[in-house]
Image 1 (cartoon, rainbow, N blue to C red):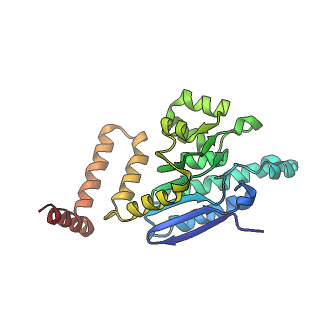
Image 2 (image 1 turned 120 degrees about the vertical axis):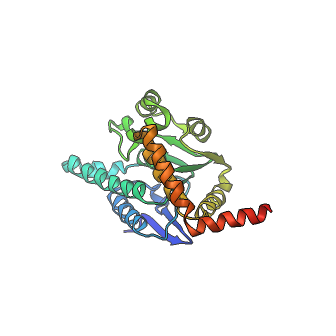
Image 3 (image 1 turned 90 degrees about the horizontal axis):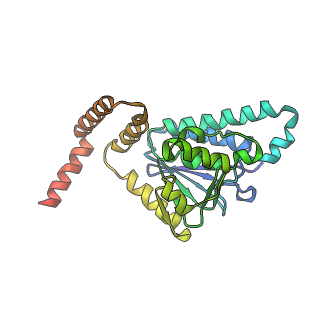
Length: 255
């Protein structure tokens, strides 16, 4: 069986790639087991400062492998529960990792692929990229955190519309909704993603990891709690040698 996922870690960047373009990066149980294992490798590696998720080929992911679900119809509920549980394990590991998740979205992301894009800390889309929930078209309900991420991005009613009616969203529509942070020409996507992750990985200290924690905690916190988190974070950062060196360099340049 060919690998569904590839992972390379170098220079502070974990590059997690969907590597089965001949299958349109469909999400089957083999994909999910590799995905969860790669996510654990990323989460447990202290050298990782940024995660880049991308896909080989013209399709990001068509989502769940419906043919596999049909083949497993004799134990459909058990099979899909195993798939969803493994999928969610990988997602939880990436969300819990200190490093933020950058997604380079090329082509179509549907179903589980759609959910993976929603979990990004920063998503960059090629101009021809498309997003579609697609779950309910097959009578299925969302997984991969879509019902948690999407209403926090667009509000409950818009989330209901997107998941119930499954409109195909263009890259520009996704940008307007806040599902992606920027849109670039298709042939510039790889270079832009590399530039962004290199910039993030080069930031001094652990401010990037702290920022991810702060933004992830914010929806569940009151203002006073969030202010306390911010005060502790910036105070700890100020005492780090890497931050002090960066400040010295700033003032030396300014002078």
